[in-house]
Length: 275
Image 1: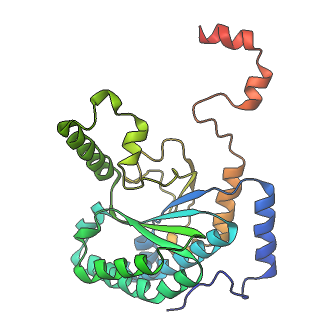
Image 2: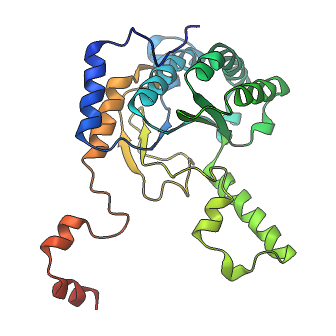
Image 3: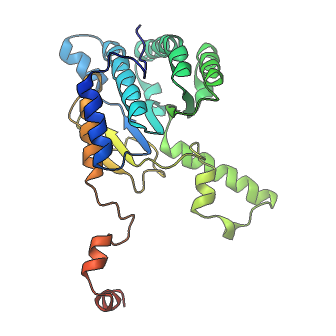
């Protein structure tokens, strides 16, 4: 299995120019999260087993990770395996486990060399011991890397994340170290699996589906969404650039009035509307 390299001279001059134009046209999202969907349907269209789609999806992971690092994205979170995925056929789950180990083994040194830190969120203790061991090895190998953080959401669900946060806070309340009135948004965020990471600025979902699939339910409150009709195994950097261009055109208000609206509406009118 080949590996990506941020400093690889194979990057075309055209792609470098596209990236520079993208960076000049607006802000690059600090945190991009991706719901990688469509592997199974892609394989079915090819007349193969679902695992074929997962295998080909690795190339998309490689290309999107590389291009995000080149663009200066600081956090890339990939929804790789949900808690619901445990309910898939045993043959497919076993194939995914083997693919995960093979990918970690092949990409570990490249992540280290390119200053990318690997982290995980989710119930990784549900994975077989050999996978937990390999994950720990790669995370330890890349722990001091600072260019970009690649986060794999493995055996993850947003409901589980919120539930475990509530349980930890409830335990502190029971112990008397936290009072109920002290619980606020920040405290809940600090007890989520993503504690210490910024919420996603941009969420990309492939395969044309319009749902969040139990992914980062708390963290996506003000994220911008981009839905691509492309199945994940065919998703490449040109589609990523389209998503970022769309993001740059959004008016991110976070529940407030935009600056252009507040400039155009007299303050007296705003006060009347709010009264």
